[in-house]
Every structure is written in structure tokens, then in C-alpha cells.
Length: 88
Length: 190
Image 1 (cartoon, rainbow over the protein chains, first blue to last red):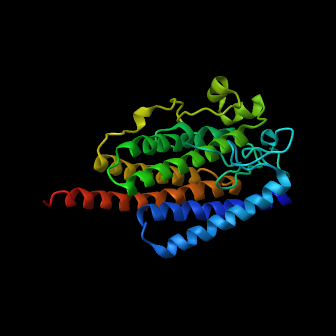
Image 2 (cartoon, rainbow over the protein chains, first blue to last red):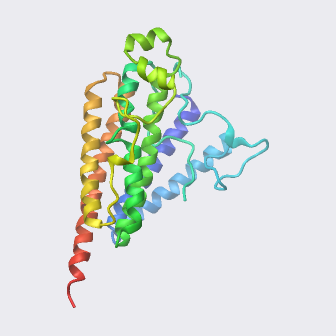
Image 3 (tube, rainbow over the protein chains, first blue to last red):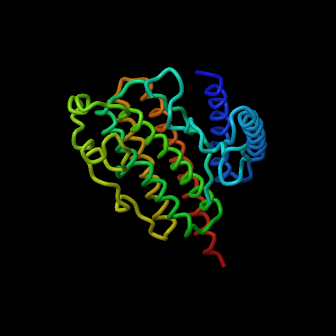
């Protein structure tokens, strides 16, 4: 894994925690402990994404991430493309 | 509305082509128990849910299934990428190749194109949620069958993740059904 892949993996882990706790909270909206955890992972995701965006460009589209010139959003790698060390 | 995050929910990095496996894993891309069916089912059912917990669960799990749809599509893409006609023939994957080359297309493992006939949105919360419980178990079982059919860890790792998510979703839908039933019962007291 190169540095970019390692950072993306950290982001994937943080986003996963957010998704999992979000879905739990959907059926347990009164669980304060879970809600506090959710907000901690929201914050962690945001910090990791900010680090990613400083180094590699926009992480989201449709206005959620700004871009330098020329429009960075179109750049590879796209998520279905593998990175180094593979035939893909 | 949806926006997009430029990463998969879980990594898919398949080093070895396998057109045979691609034609089988496509079952979860366009088959009756696959991810797009799950997503469209939940996103369709969410409109007529009577309580907020149910609207949220269907909205959010429906959205997560789209992320899974993307993972499975990626697996099919990587398993087919740069396959030669000889490799396609050796894998017995000619029928898919003739229809779609090395492209990604939503069909079952048997070649039946995706159809909304594989799910319902009945406008009744109890019927819909009961269907959703069954759907998650069908998907889980399908992932178990797929895992048995591959011995490539690059392939089985994302499949095991996706299988585990079905188990969690089953749990969430069970909780939602109970809450809907409590709500329906509470309306009977005057």
C-alpha cells in the first residue's frame, strides 16, 4: 500500500464506524453513549478527509469539496481502480 | 439526495483475473438477491413508513446498499479486466463476453437481466419490513455460497465484509419491525 492508499484505508475505517453507529442510532435514537461515539467518529472522519484533500484533492463532489484548477475531481484513481502492486 | 465519496466502503484490490468468478459474483450486482435490488427495495419502501425510525433505517440502509453495489461492480470489473479471448473461453464465460465484453452489467449468474420483479414495495410497513428481513437473509446466504466458490483472499475478504453487513441489517430491520408493531398497537388505545 502506498501513502495515499493507507490514508484512504484510515478514512474507510472512520466512515465505516459512522455508518454502523448511524444505523444503530436509527433504531436507538435515545442511546446517548452511541450518539457521543457517533460524533467522535464524525470528527475523526472530517480530520482525515481534510488531510486527504490537502494532499490529493477533492474527496466529495457536488459542492462538498472545493477544487484547484483545472478541475481536480475528474482525476484518477477512481475507487474501482486499483493502485500499485496489481495488474489493475 | 445523494452525493459521492471517492472511496469504496471496503477495499477491493483483486490481483488475479478470473472471468469465471466474475460471472458468478455478478449475481450480487444484478441477481434477485443482490445489492441493487436491496437498495431499490428499501429506498422505495421508505416513503410509506409510518414512523421516523423506519424512514431513517430504510433511507440509510438503502444508501449503504448502493455502496455495496459499487463494491460488487468493482469486483466484476477487476476480475474481467484485460481478460483475453482465450482466458474467457477457458473460463466458460463466452455468453457474458458476447453480451458485455469485459463490461459490468447487472444480471443474475444465470444471465437474467435485473428486474424489479425481485422485490416489492407494498405500502404496508409490516409486509415491507418482513420482506426486508427475508431479503437480508437471502443476501447473506448468497455471500456464503460465493465465499465457498473462491479461494482467492483478495476476493473472499470483501465478500466476508458484505456478508457481515447483511447480518447487521437483519438485526436493524428486526428492531424496526418491533417498533412499527408497537406503534400500530398503540394506535388502538382511545
